[in-house]
Length: 154
Image 1 (tube, helix red, strand yellow):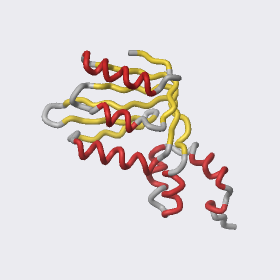
Image 2 (cartoon, helix red, strand yellow):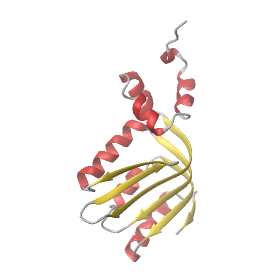
Image 3 (cartoon, one colour):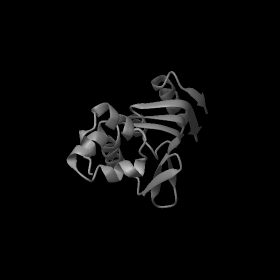
Image 4 (cartoon, helix red, strand yellow):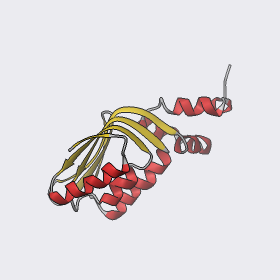
């Protein structure tokens, strides 16, 4: 007996999408256009923790994005690479909820506009900021106004 999962009610499919991890969402969206649409238009569910950070390792900067233990790192942080990340995020989910989310802002390494666009559609319980400079601390204040219901540690 075979069942076509896509024939299940839309509400059920959306709830199912909340239970699938990020790596599985990446794989699932490649199977067919219908799944790609379902993945991109659904909420990714709840994760206990997440993060976005950048750091310099000499010549090339790195950016890391974490979802509850799954970390994706990219070397060679450029404006184009950051745009690629934002573009890919649109294919993975509309929104996501985190118990805790950490942002490490180093002025010059991760533009504030990228971090704000990346966290669009996020629901965050506790926001942790690691501000490396006074200018980064000023950028942190923009996050606080964007997520008024969250608690913060700086």
